[in-house]
Length: 263
Image: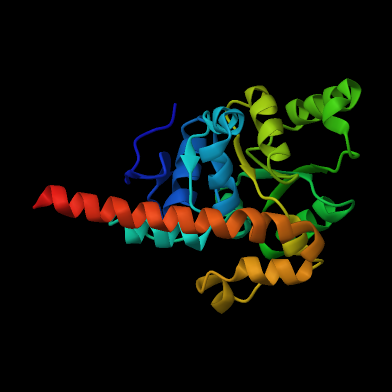
């Protein structure tokens, strides 16, 4: 069970989100590690929120996470529109840098799991170069379909138990990474787990991330769409835009209702 938090939670379409800054999130993880308590950070963006709202199985899968942080500017905008503002976006692709840096200073170790072939190992080297004293316990890039191969899963379990990392970054995309974290985290009850999607490739530079200005404007999705139109068209344009309209409309309605009640 996690220790006391210095922040509250808000609700977006019935899903609770921690109203936390990135620095607070990092500090909380390090404090929990020092206390011998593990955990799991889920970083819902607009697509994740849509599935948390609409898909019971995904909602139940993520229910065991200790932290839900908003990895998407539409969530931040919606929170402000309804009068329950989140302080900032907390992206998994940022946490892999800030949390790793803090882990290095605290003498903690990391493990990188997933990603495209070779990226976990390369990202581990780069993170170690950037953060003096960082302990990279190991990396693994299992073959596609490994989650259905009991022998491959057994080997991964044995590796994690043997290495005992403090923080495990899982880069398999959603919902595969959430399914794997939910299955494996009991093996390392004192470790913290974070699904980071494509972030290993961001670290290595194999995939170019949007500029800070584009990210602040909430247009990183457009940057990604231009890079991978075939893969992301349905997610962003078919599902994402209609859901964003629904989210913002619901937030505006909640704001007006709360104002009316207050009167």
